[in-house]
Length: 97
Image (tube, rainbow, N blue to C red; front, side):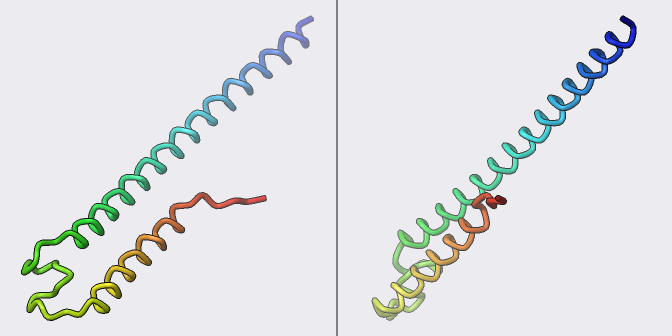
């Protein structure tokens, strides 16, 4: 009977250790995910502020002199969208089969 109790005690310790490691891993993953979302949210806000910048401001899509063409403004927006898209791809979880 002593061997039986020792084996179940060891099994319980292993299960508790596994649960603790799993909880720590899940916590780390959730924190990393929250940081990624926060960073992405900040980038989206920056993109929105660029798109809605007041005319004449230094970040305006119309440029500092107001002579920037529509094509140039669209090009700048496309570059900003590509930047956000690349960041989204970096944040997507890697799928390991």
